[in-house]
Amino acid sequence: MDNDILQLWGEVIDTDAENLRITFVDESRDDIHPAQGVPGQKHFITIISDEIPGILRLFTLEGWRTFLLQDPRLRQYHRIYALFVNESFETQQWKVVPWKQMQPEASEINVPVRTVSLTKSIIRCFSTDFLPPDTIAPWLLISGDKMTDEPMKLWASLACRELLKCFVNELFSAEIKKVGLSGKPPRKIPFGEEHAALPAFDVIQETAKWIFLEGDEIELKHTFLSSELAREWPEGITFCEGIVYRLPPALESARLLYKAHIRTGGKDTLKSLADLRKSLAEETQKILQQSRDLASALWKDMALVISTLVLRYSLESLKASGPQKVYALAFCALALYIAISYGMSVYINRHSLSLLGKNRTTWRNKLYGFLDEQDYQELAGLPVNAAMQSYCRVERITSVIVLILVTLLLTAAASEFWSISTLLQSGYTWVMSALQFLTPP
Image (cartoon, rainbow, N blue to C red; front, side, top):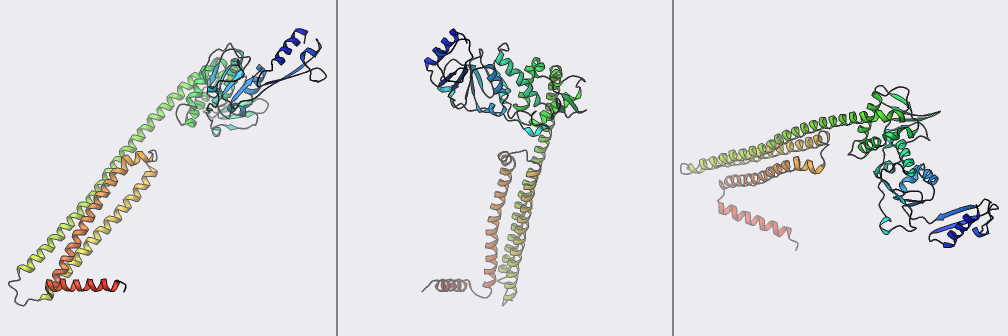
């Protein structure tokens, strides 16, 4: 260093900048003040700045290059200040701005980190030094297109390299780095130099955003693209060179294939929903039909009871000392018939409804798994539940009526031997005795 440079460094050290520590040593590795330095000799300067969580500050372009090659560190920051940057630009992960002040603004601290993860399972790696990035967020540009600025040109070149590794199916690294495309036919292509892909920077960015940011089904879109790249890949050129003119048509074809897939899937979904609507209508009709059958059977039983009672008491005047036991036996047999008949109907209905419920659960999981629980309940659950509630109301009402009919028949049978007043008195006595027995002394 000459005398003027030593003097300038002395002014810098004397400034005592906040959050910035500078050490100045001579050739003997002794700490000195720049004013004590000998002009013409080598001097070593170390500058240390206090780190703020989420914020990185860089002094040199070489430090920028080193940082970009450290893949695990890229997701730790959301803002980067650099002395060598003239034009700001922003990626999905962080914003790069000129370093003009020591302390960042309050709004720039504790900004949530935006991270787009890459499913590494879709890319097979056969080496440890040629891998896809942990996250593609640092390599997806949001704003800034000044490719004349050296820091951004360096970033753009590395962004092409990292994103291109995400478009292939396999990564190899032996004597030279190669990529594999699982198409028809499958390809194994030398990767080449990333700067050769810079002319395709915009379409590379567009492709990465389409695959990894636009909706789901990342693996499917990745498969469509890699297959299209492999289909007409020219022989004898590297991946970075060929991507310039092969990626635009491959992206267009992959998008068309994906749209066709979506339309086909939509047709299948509509067909499944139509089947669901048909099955739902049939099941609801079955439940309502069981309600009608239960009510119809009840009316038949009521008609039989009423006709029997009318026949019995209409012949009262013709009976001299009629066979009371015969009528009592007829009433009891009729009551038993009604109870058994109604009980069997209720049992059969409940068993069939249980089977319908189990079948409904089965085809809910197998055929209509694409519907979330809320949509399924709105489409199928609520109508079926309403039909079930209607059936349960009918069953409760008919059960009460059947109980009344059976009680009426048994009372009529008992009246053949005892008067109604005697039966009521005996019933009252029996109830009181039972209460007295159950009541503790």
